[in-house]
Amino acid sequence: MDAALYEARHSFVWNFGADLLPLLDPKPDERILDLGCGTGQLTAKIAQSGAHVVGLDRSAEMIGQARQNYPKIEFKLADGASFSFPGEFDAVFSNAALHWIREPENVIRSIVSSLRPGGRFVAEFGGKRNVGRLLAAAKTALEKRGFEYANPWYFPSIGEYSSLLEQNGFEVSAAWHFDRQTLLDEGLDAMRDWIQMFGFVVLAPAPKPEWPAIMTEIEDHLRSDLFNNGRWMMDYVRIRVQAIFKPDPQH
Image (cartoon, rainbow, N blue to C red; front, side, top):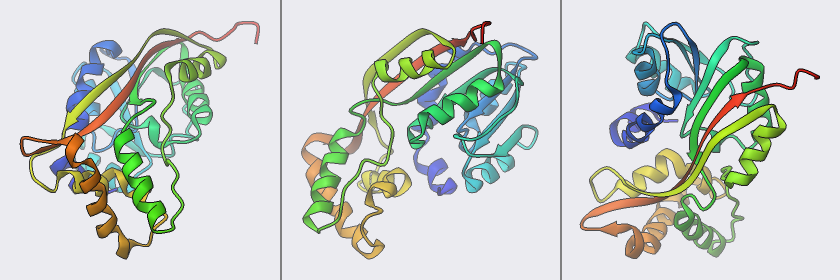
């Protein structure tokens, strides 16, 4: 991922994520894992509580930028579907990351392996119907050119995700599924910047020389719904969960 573009044009990602921190309620001396930490802005906010926080991301570029931004915080390069810190953490936190991993069971098992009994899990990520208009426009543009379309992300419902958590020893304290239409940064190219930053995986079936024309067609499809008063917005739908790891003592 392009860490420079992420920091320059997509600050809304961690600005919205700051709303999650009261749910996490980090305490001094707790050990907390920030799963999918990006360039570390929310990791640093958690550290301000006095907690010992570790940031984890599978993007070497993001981790490299996070280490530059916050040299006193520990950041680890690892895959969110296959990490393990046996019983090391009091809480796992994640913002805007889990929809990137299409093996949710593996992610949850990794979280379980890293939490102490009674540990907390607080996360927000893309839920069912997230960026639905963009995906519909991309499908039209790709299939018109003879390319196969597939949603590259994992956008579950509350029921689907809560069930996975419960099957792995979590007690779900609270869960929300809500629309959050989000203003992108200013500029006529903001939608194109978003696609280049996040939506490149949608365009992957097409060769890169065709991407500019496809992005233009997507913009044309979306303009009537998602461009108002000179600003682009994105039709985000989010899932937010708060859960406690309570393993069955009989197992």
